[in-house]
Image (cartoon, rainbow, N blue to C red; front, side, top):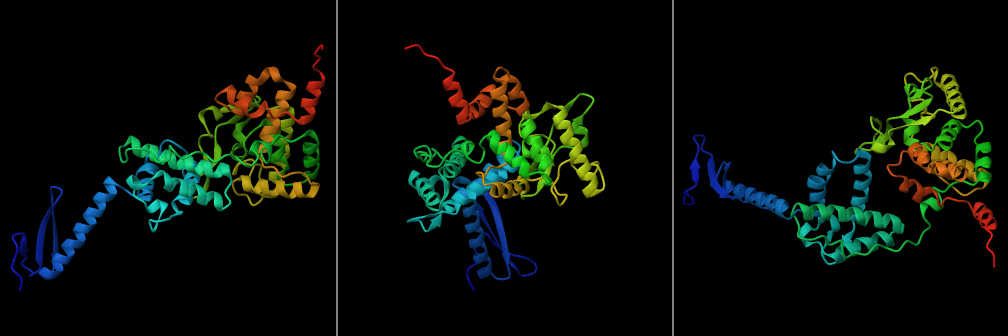
Length: 377
């Protein structure tokens, strides 16, 4: 039998207790024999050392899950945390050559600029668009910036990694583009009788976002004041479930949109549709929901838009194109009222409105404008 150590002690039940000190604190383990107690002590010590290492120099995954995400929870919407979390996991899953580990398994202090560049290249080689890759790397950089601020690391390895040069057309010129008048007419002719016709008509007549439409209740249609109250939106939790958020996308998104006669007729049509399909006029559910009676999601409407675009043979677009089309037609017809447009869209700054939509002029309008310019030569 081995010699009893100073910190060993035998309990009345015959089990062996070993005490030890780590970083100024006393810990103890108990086992039937001294040999088992020694093994148990060693495992406990390794665990403490691992916990210390994770606290001082955590892995990228550990820092993101245990520090960065909790820090962000009361600062951004759950849907943002979820979508950016998906971006992070794409980066974290990239194998880093020469380390035998994935990017997320590297310790924060050990990450080099070349590791971030390896992630960037791997994502691009996997077929991601330059915009998507740039967004992912920007989010990773945000994580490392936070780690610099709380002194987990001394510097951000992403700062020397250049953005990829965009090779694809911008979304505002493709799926988020403003529809031409011919496209608009052809599309809504094809949408006649579709379950989502009223939803699409409301968006193109008001510039509302799809999430805002899906969150509308009867009380939001204020016929006394003649406005639609925008106070909430359909959002997504971290676990992926959809729900009606009690607040809209941003503070500036709180707004009232004039309830014009055209919009009022869309509302009446939708109420009739609800009564016919669901047996009520919307008291127990949002005014606009999916065909199955679920919360309205962009996916459902985009799926219908895709079918109609294929049928009438026009380039594909998404629900956001209705917002761009509304803004473009507004600027074309009432350019002096850009401040009103900014308020209707729920932008925090008129510069956002002008930068996004003032350039959404159609080619025909540009030609028309150029032909009206007279220069003496």
